[in-house]
Amino acid sequence: MQAELNSQKMSLLNRTWWLIAFSIAMGFLEASVVVYLRQLYYPQGFGFPLVVLSPEIGIVEIFREAATIIMLLAVGILTGYNARQRLAFFLISFAIWDLFYYVFLKLALDWPESLFTWDILFLIPAPWVGPVLSPLIICFTMLTFSAAILRNENTGQSHNLNWQHWSFIISGSLIIIIAWMWDYIAYSGRISDAPDRALEVLSTYVPVYFNWWMFGIGEALIIAGIVLYYRSSKKSA
Image (cartoon, rainbow, N blue to C red; front, side, top):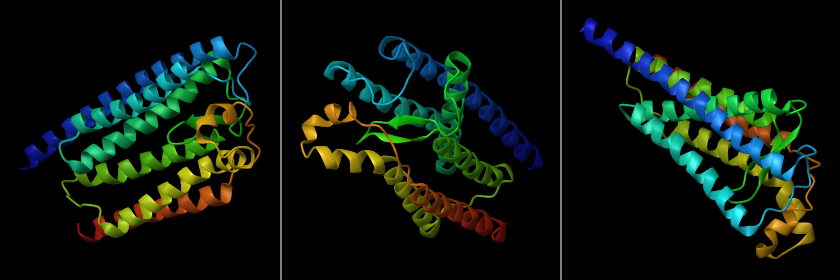
C-alpha cells in the first residue's frame, strides 16, 4: 500500500513538472505573438488608445484567445487522473502561462514599465482591462488553490469541493471579471449605444479608473472559498 502511494506521489510530481515546463513554453509563445503584433501596430511602444484592428484580424485575435484557453484546459484534463487533479492542473497551467507571459514581455520589450501599467487582458465578451498587478494577483491565487488540492491528492485524501466552496469561488471570480470590464463598459456606455461599434469605441478608450474595491471583494471571496476548502479537508483527514 505504501509503495503504491509513493508511486502515485512520484507520478503526480513528474506530471506537475512537465505541466510547468509546457506552461512556461506556452507563455513564451504567447509573448512572441504579442511582440510581433506590437512591432506591427505599436512601433513607438504600446499604449492606449488602442490601434483599431481590421475586422479580419480582430476576429482572428478573438479566436486565438479562445484557442489559448482551450489548450490550457485540454492540457489540464489530459494531465489529471480525476476531476480534482484536472482542475488543479488547469489552474497551474493558466497561472504559470500568464506569469511567464509577462516575464518574457519584460525581457523582450522591457514592458510593463511597472506593476500598475494598464494592459488589455481579454476580449471576450467585452474588453477586460486593468493594471498588470491585478492578473498577477489572480495567478498566485490560482497557484494557492491548486496547491491546496494537490496537497490532498498527494496525501491520498479525496475531498471534493462542495457547494459552499464553489459559491465563494465562483461569485468572487465573477466580481473580478466585472471589475476588469467595469471601466470600459462605463466608457462605451457614455459614447455609444451601438454594439456593432465596439472596435470604434475601443479605439478611443483610455483607461482611467480601476475598481480596486470591487476587485478586492472578489479576491476576498475566492480566498475565503479556498480557506474553507482547506479547513474542511483537514477535518476529514
